[in-house]
Amino acid sequence: MPCSNSGVERHLVGWPEPFKPEHLIPLSKNYTHWEHLNEHMKYSAKVKQVMAPGSVFVASIREPLSHFYSYYNFYKMENTYKGYLKEPDKFKYFLDNIKTMPHLELIHHMPPSNPIAQCFGIKQEEQYNTIAIQEKIEEIEKEFDLVIVVEHMEESLILLTECSDLTIEDVVILKNANVGHFKKSKPILTPNEYENLIQWNLADSMIYNHFNKTLWRKIEKFGHDKMAIKIKELRMAQSIKQKKCDSVKRKSILKRVEDLKIKHDCMIQNLNYIGADKYFRNKMTEKGIYDIERAQKTCKYPPDKHGE
Image (cartoon, rainbow, N blue to C red; front, side, top):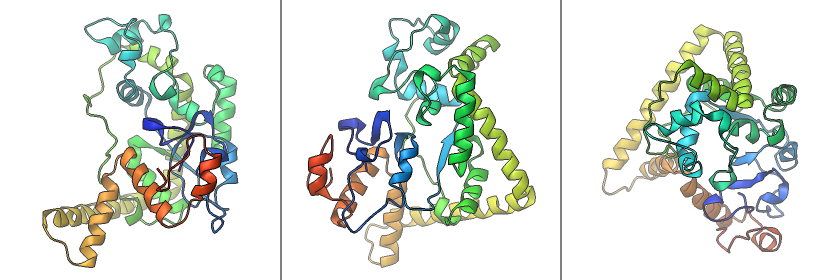
């Protein structure tokens, strides 16, 4: 868990700095490495210093238009760029006039362009340098075991079970609790608007195009017939889990240990990033995984005795 940022940014690992081990709450003497680290960070090879040997490295990417439209809304870019935008459609106005738009820092120190590339550690001044972008793509190929493509989530999850010790039941997704409550449908863009969006997010677009092709090469190697069978298994596991969650939700009193476990597992699935941060900080502190005493001396934003 990070201790490098505060308040609503507490789930971020040192952002906007590249990852450093000191961004995390130190582990107690009984633990030498992290076995699982699922946080929003700017990737650096230094993360290998804190992970257990043989750790699997996974990232996820999304189609540029869908991702940037979601990102534009989630990070309230209209507020940041309010002096530059006009009605009736501020998003399309932004794209139509993108060559006049400055690169303004968004809330939580997030960049206005190429957020995926910058999460992978590309420097802001290199986000339009095609040579630097290609070098970063080659680094990602070398460092990551799998790059999940959101538009092909089921296939990606099956491949995740192949490159890790996770089972199909482990990778079942019921709900995304971090989706913002804004209009979900993508806007219809003119060819010029779409090209402007791609050029504004050039590094993200190059990364997406490369790893989308990479994913399909892996699917081809895995076998389409075998993939179809595994996806059926995944959907069946998802259906079973959803029914179990719905079942315990309808019960006012839970006495069976199995029901309590199901309720707990379903609760974890529904946590947003703020709730998950609080829950796991408390649990890991209770179990003595953190060295809270040392953290209170070394962390930029020291946790309290409960890990918060």
